Image (cartoon, rainbow, N blue to C red; front, side, top):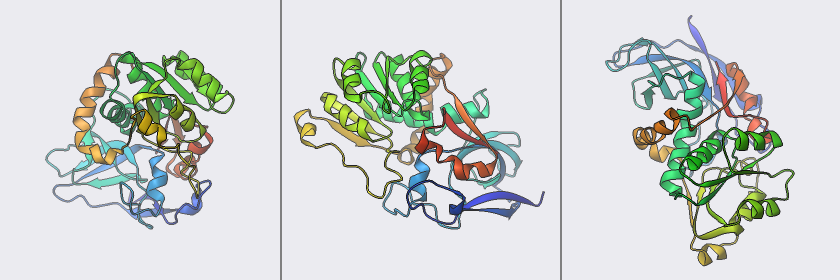
Length: 332
């Protein structure tokens, strides 16, 4: 094989659905592996809501935008097929930022070996960005305590589902916000959440009062939207709001207004946003924290797998419609 397929970003989203018009499918020459380098054949790549920010022209975000004409950014997993690097051997499984492409040439930094005896889809669903994000956000930002109540928006998503299960394992009352009855059933009856709110059909305020009789101590925010105001009003004194994502606003030219800050003063709330690029140096410690929960069978997951590299160009829209069921992954 003399070439491989890659997908470049060639235009910025203007709001609304993301489609093939933003991308260009290209053939690139197979790289020559030099001393200190190794070549990875990527098998699966992750689709994440953060990609909407990476495609935007915002230069003041937590990570520089993808340059137009460059390979679209993403994390993935694959196998080393050629190596002239002392620390990586042919056959090693590795995980990290490799982009929308079939092959990735690396000199090591940013890629980690995968040793857990789990399929690639399970690794991306639990031990990659979703699990790391959930672990960092819940434990290091949310600081949960046994007996507290946590509400998780986007609770059937890749991050939210893990947050809820970790919190439940540590003795919290866990309420999830989802967009369908099927997802509500899954998080309660399969994942063990204490209750679910379908924001599309339930009376959000009444349901939240019913499910959080003692108020809310931690709100793990993945979505934004109307639920944010209702949960904010239920926060207890010294509550913590962990701001991880705002999928409801990513495609809007003008984001929705947030809650009034008077309650922040009255209730002495802590509101903290976080992003994982600040914590990539903490990955070993986060994995050490997460792994026992997984090995003890306390973390379940499901993956929504799209076939073929080019499916990524339209697959991102599943985040807006809520049609994805579980971690969104592209099988290359």
